Structure formats: structure tokens, C-alpha cells
Image 1 (cartoon, rainbow, N blue to C red):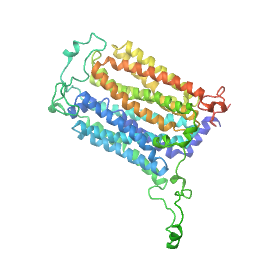
Image 2: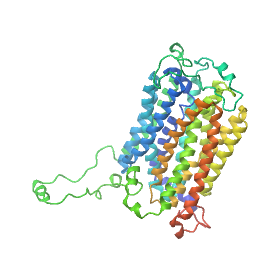
Image 3: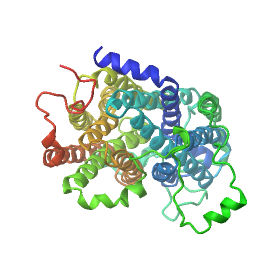
Image 4: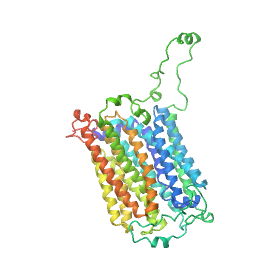
Amino acid sequence: MGCDGRVSGLLRRHLQPTLTYWSVFFSFGLCIAFLGPTLLDLRCQTHSSLPQISWVFFSQQLCLLLGSALGGVFKRTLAQSLWALFTSTLAISLVFVVIPFCRDVKVLASVMALAGLAMGCIDTVANMQLVRMYQKDSAFFLQVLHFFVGFGALLSPLIADPFLSEANCFPDNSTANATSRSHPFHTSRVLGQHHAGAQPWSNQTVPGLPTKEGAETRVSYAFWIMALINLPVPLAVLFLLSKERLLTCPQRKPLLLPADELALETRPPEKEDTSSLPPKFQLYPGHEDLFSCCQRRNFREAPCSFFAIHISAALVLFMTDGMTGAYSAFVYSYAVEKPLSVGHKTAGYLPSLFWGFITLGRLASIPISSRMRPATMVFVNVVGVVVTFLLLLIFSYNVIFLFAGTASLGLFLSSTFPSMLAYTEDILQYTGCATTVLVTGAGVGEMALQMLVGLIFQAQGSYSFLVCGVIFGCLAFAFYVLLLFFHRMHPGLSSVSTQDKPLGLENSECYQR
């Protein structure tokens, strides 16, 4: 039947859990993209400056990283995984409901921290369950999984756009900006200047902050609509729990008689025997959480290339996922600033355009991933990102090219994560901790680069936004070259010929000649 027949057969066999994991990642995407276009309204709502509101991004990404690491604790059995996904997706709906009531930036940061924990748990558990379920055939299903991230991230800015404020609730700083436009790194401040003596978390009235009278927005309705749209996802997880008979505790061995208990008192303690339990309650071998990965004793005999592959692949995703998060978060702010001065409503379409082309790219990569090597896909993506940022830098005063470049970036960044995950797992023959390490590296990148770009954006002006993109893209390419070098050094290549088979499909039963 070939590859297509095998993939369709696997999908039919695991249809409901696969659809559930895909829908869970829709929740992830819905929650990851709304902060960028609603930034001005949330600043008005919380009466905060840009440095203050940047802590909201930081808290979300920091807790996303923590959730990714802690998610490994809940993926050891199917029951734990599904209950973790149900709790996380339900928490995301609750977060959307609560955001409009957050009138203080500290409260908003705390709520987004909860959302980050839920997203991190979803990221680790859903990726791991698909890799565990399909293993060498997981590349196709991972591409679809990350398509749903893009679909959710595309939808949330579109929902928010009709409710964004037309007028700016911040004082006009055009005079201050006009004096500094002659230098490429002009000192125009994004969304208003903040007072030099303002404390990071203070909500006092300072120049550049909205007044309480002007802080009313209609964006609350957008968040409540997102909460309703997301609600079917935890219900789908609950339905899968019911189908797998996981809504009740598993029946273990019957209680021992007193005589048996007395006889066992002299025996040394033994590990709990789970072999008699159904598979859904048994521990899954391999693919451990981050803490367990760091404690594995057999790493002592692993070659240096084993660790180098993990690290270099994680660094590539550190850069690419960090660029995705930073661009989505700040492209709206970049567009409304000088020299472009795009209108608020028009600029609100930029995050939707970005995530729309990420969605389109992930949709296109589904058939491409079965015909092209994952290594080649990552190479094309990284080079495309660097070239696009260079062109954006050259044509930085062109609004039309900003939209074209945003679409191009979304297209090239779309399939980087699933392709890198499939590539790295295949190199290591599914024996390492690649999924956990890569998810953690991507989470650290989104947290660190968003915060870094926000600080540089505030200090150096809007032009630095594109310079950061070029630097991050070049670093991603350098780390990818290192990954290829360590791949060549890895001993696993000695037993596998890669001359005639696409990399990533060498050991797959899909690949036939």
C-alpha cells in the first residue's frame, strides 16, 4: 500500500486519541497568540507601561517552561496524561474568562502564569503521546499537531481584532520621536515613555500611561468568545477518558487476609507490580521527563555526540521558537510606531497574517514531510528566516513589504519544530530524551527572547526589532550546522545507510523503494 496506506491505517487505528491530542494543541495555539494584538488594550486596562506589561509575557513563558518540565511527571501512564490534558485545557478556558477582570498588571501576570503552566503541560504531554503512539511514523502526525497550533493562533487575533480600541489611550509622543528619527536606532519609545522613577510593578500615574478614565475597552468580549470556543476541547478529553474507562480508579489486587499480611511482614519491600494492570495504567518506558533524563545512569557510556545532538537541536529551537514568540508579540507594536505608523486596526491584522501563514505552512508540510528529509526541511526554513529578516531590514520603511515579510516568516517558521523533533528522534533511534529536551529548549527560547526583545525594543527603538531577528536567525543557522556536524560523528550512523534513503525515514516501514 505504500506510505500513504500505512499512515491512513495507523490513523484509523488511533483515530479518537489522535484527534483529541490535535484539538488540545488548538487550545495551546488559541492561548499563545492573543497577547500581541491586545497589548494596547491590556495596557489601558491595567494602567501599565511597556516594561510593566512585558512581565506578563515573561510570566507566561517562564511558567510554560516550568509546565513543560513538570508535564513529564503526568505522562507516565495514559490515565495521568489525559487527566493532565483535561485540567490544562479547562484552565485555559478559565483564564480567558478571568482576564477582563484583571485591573492590575500583577494580577494579570499571575493569571498568565497559570495559562503558561497549562500550555507547558499540553506541549510536553501531547507531543510525547503522539511520538509514543506512532514512533518512526510520527513525523506526519507531528506536522498535523503543530498545524492545529497555527490554526488556534490564527483564530485568536481574528477574534480580538473587531474589539480592539480605535483610539490610543496614551499621550502622543510624536514630538519626542521626531527628534530621533535621523538615527537608525532612534530612541522612540514603544507605546509611550515611562517615568524614570517608576517602580517595575507600580501602577501610579506617570507620563505615557493611560488614565483610568480612558481605560475602558471592549476587548473583554473577545476573551469570553475565546473561552466558549475552547470549551469543547476539555469535553473531548473527558469523552476520551470515559471511552478508555479512566473516569474511575483502576481495580488493583484484592485486600490481603490478616494471615497473608502477617506472612508478608518478613519479606523485603518490593516494587509495585503493574504488569497485571491494563496497558493504560502501566508505566511507559523511555521518553522520560527532564529530571529523569538528567539522572539516567546509562548516560555514562553515551558518546559525546549523543549530548551534543541534544544540545545543538535544542539551541536551534531556542532561536526559532524564540523568534516566533517575539515576532508575534511585538510586530503589532513595531507597526504602530514610527517610521511606519500603521493604524491600529490595520496593524492588528499582522499577528493574524503571521499565524495564518504558519498554519498554511504546517498544512503544506503534512504531505511534504512524507517526501522530504526533515533535515532538508529545517535547512530551508532557517535559511528562509535569515533572508526574510534581512529583506525586512533593508525595506524597513515599506508597509507593504512588512506584510509580505510577515507572511514569509510565518511560512518558514511553520514546520521547524516538528521537523527538528522528527529529525533528532530519528538520529537517536528513539532512545534519548530528545522530545523533552527540545520542548524545554523551545520554551526557554520563547521566554528569554521575548523578554530580551522587549527590553531592547524599549531602549533602542523599533529598528532594533529587525536587527534582533537577523542576529537570532544567523545563530539558529550556526547551531543547525553544528547539529549536522555532530550527526556525522554519531556512532549510530555506522549501522544505517543514509545514501539512498531520506533522512528521518531510514528506519520507517513507510519508506519503500
